[in-house]
Image (tube, helix red, strand yellow):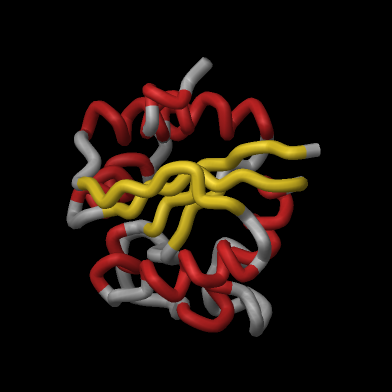
Length: 141
C-alpha cells in the first residue's frame, strides 16, 4: 500500500549538516521524495504540529527547540513508508537507538531540556495526513 509520511530533519540535524545523509538514507530505502523544503518553522505551525502535547511539561521547551533553527521538511512516499521510516529513524532516545538507524548512528544524548533526536516521522496514516496538511498545505487533498 503506497502511502505518504512527513519527515522532519529537526534543527539539531540541520545544524550538524546531517540533512544530506538523512535524505540519502530515505532515498536508499527506496522511498520517493515528493516535497522538500528548508524553512524556519513558525510558532503557529509548531503549535498545530504539537497540539496534542500542549500543556505537558516538555511542550514549551520542545517548541523553543524547534524554533531555534531551520528544519528540513520532507514528504516521502512509498510502500509502508510510515512504518519503514520510523524503523529507519530508530528509537526516540538516541542512546538506546539501534546501530544502523539514523538516531543510533548519528544521534547522541545532549544535556538539553528536550531530547534532540535529529528527526521526526509521522506515526500513522492519520497523523501523516494531518502533519502534511500543516507543513505542506498545497499537498492536502
